[in-house]
Image (cartoon, rainbow, N blue to C red; front, side):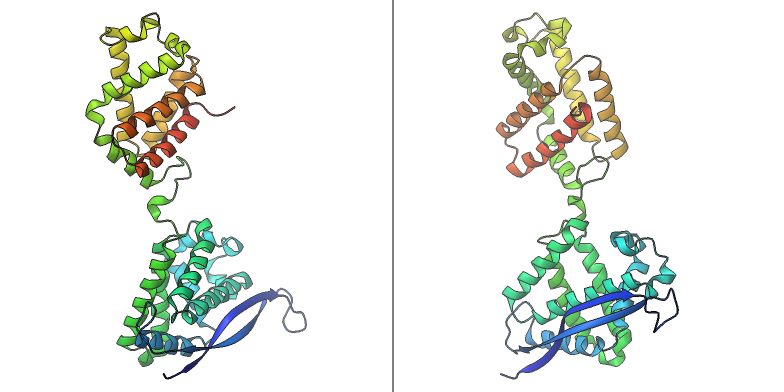
Amino acid sequence: MQVLTIALFLGIVATASACASMAAPGTTVTTVTTSVTTVSADEESTGILSANERSLIRKTWDQAKKDGDVAPQVLFRFIKAHPEYQKKFSKFADVPQSELLTNGNFLAQAYTILAGLNVVIQSLSSQELLANQLNVLGGAHQPRGVTPAMFEEFGVIVEQVLEEELGNGFSAEARQAWKHGIHALVAGVSKTLKNPEDLADPQTKLTLHQIRDVQRSWENIRSGRNALVSSIFVKLFKETPRVQKHFAKFSSVAVDSLAGHADYEKQVALVADRLDTIISAMDDKLQLLGNIYYMKYTHLERGISRDTFEDFGRLLLDVLGASGVSSDDLDSWKGVLAVFVNGVSPKK
């Protein structure tokens, strides 16, 4: 087994300080401290990539990282290509792009990213070690709303910078190895990162994933929505008789005699159609918020309590489960119903 000695940066700490003795007042000087470790890389076909691909990635990266400008250039080009992502870096979120390359906080972040990439590259030979590193990487970025697509976009920038830095040294074979490596990285971090459809909208508090689950499962049962709503009303009125008193036109009708009562059937159809309208328009944020506000306005004056909405939601989940809706879809229904209840009847 041929042993390759690879010097990798395990930790890079960038600190910015104003040094009066070294620079003019107001000038920020970035000091980079590196710690180096040595690892042995085998040539066996273990790990996610082939031995040759691992060797190419290490070789090209070992050459490129000697230039201290690589890390800042990667991050700068990433932000320039996707300016909306700059807001995710609070310490330089509002710094003009033209000033980023001389901003201490920006440089510190660039070298921190370089350190993280070094650790991942060091772990390529071990599936277990690489998986652990990617879990840590994904876990660190998940709270910030970072998505797998962002890592893919970052990988594209890394390839571009490496190609410019290494010139002919970045061969087609090396480029392909990096593509495979970035694909492996994205696949690994995706296990702990949220996809765009799993990110909650800041206004509606719903994810696209939840909306799609609810709409899809509702489509399978919507033809029987009147019977579904009627069964919920009957259970609700039997559990809490006072709720029936909100419906003056059939408030005194025995629960078991409600079926077929004209005013009751009209109310059932009204609720079923309203439910259908709300669910069908859930992917339109303005309509969704408008429907929630309308429900709040029309029910507030009738004095219908939050408990009633919660009970209706609970019984709806029971009926959906009995209708064959999957447990995963039911979880989405729970999230959606919680948003509706909080919107229509906020906690006091």
